[in-house]
Length: 127
Image (tube, rainbow, N blue to C red):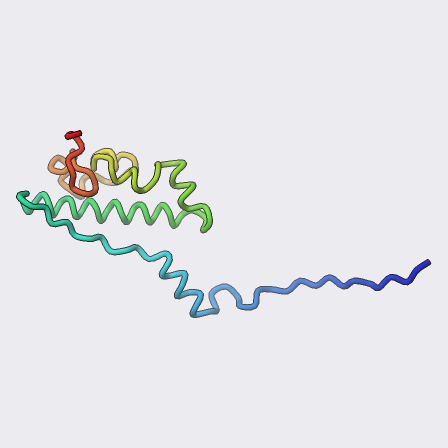
């Protein structure tokens, strides 16, 4: 019989407990923060239309980030794409379709004014 050295198995916790590192929490906040919505300035268009489109864009961005934040960290984009399509493809749809897809309240904007525009202010009926 040979003498084998005994192995000790020990588990170590993380070097820094979750939530105790200021640098890591700052990085996490930066990654989760929503970039501010750039305000569109459409030429030769009523200011009311521009205002409504900017309100709709803000609602859409907030809803997209809310949905993304509900998914696990490494699978956000993939799970979002499975359910809704890619973020860029959603933004190419008409505002009315985006509101239906993301289940947004259409009473918060005057949807009739901007229903045929996409997120970027382009008319989707013209192809």
